[in-house]
Image (cartoon, rainbow over all chains, first blue to last red; front, side):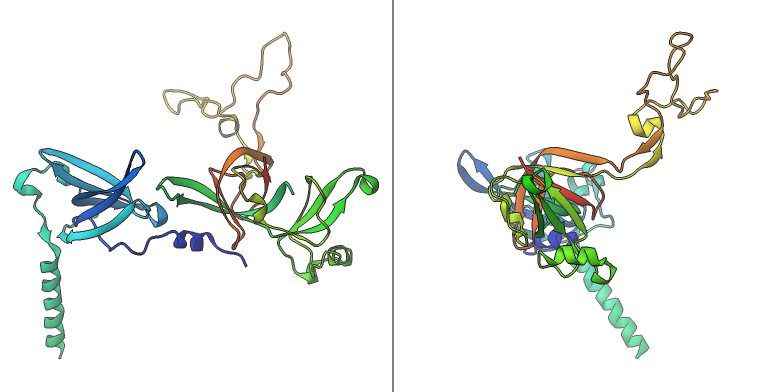
Length: 132
Length: 205
């Protein structure tokens, strides 16, 4: 009969969004109301942090608009996010890459995560072979 | 009915359809059984006795079992509270559910605040504290209790250390963000008095 708070929170989570982490480049399609019209505004940039847990998870996306850096904070489970796609998976060592704010030009490049995965997979295979 | 009994489940965040996020307290309200109707003729006042929650029958006295059997219950409810009512009195044995909050925008929530035990004046009345170092000896003391030869006594009502919390507390004009009739839940914007799992009374304004 009784329902727990955890269960209520779980119902309010969105499961349709792909997983991503700091360093990834994402495109957030955000619904915006202008007057009485609603349109979708895409915002593409690098995720510099994912903070919080559960329903109140927020993430920050940073992009360069012309020469000016713009950071936007989105609630992860907001119904305002029409859709979200991970454009590129980046390889970074930190969960919060605020050092990006100090970097400019070529220094802001982020390595692709897939290459690391290939390497680690190769290592596992090599170990398995050595055991056998 | 004007009010319902409930259990505070805790706080979380909900999104409205337009994307606004609200911090809400989730209250499991009812269903409450009407266990007795107090009338002007019999009791000298008008009220409805509501039962909420469950206890084990083996822990109830025969008097309790007999009283609550009248409303079709097999054991005594955990909480029994009398509340005033509007219009016709509901008959004994009917269930009061959250559907009474259909279309309601604002509610009052009554509860018992969290007990803080014997607390000093800083925690209890927001007094200022003294500094820790530089020869200071007055760290958390309440300071002066009054004047000198005249009036030669402490004025009644002087704020002093003592028991804090665990008293009746009301929060008025809370926005009812939504309600869930299926799971008997009320989502009230903002904080509500008392600990998690504490008894609260939610009333329509």
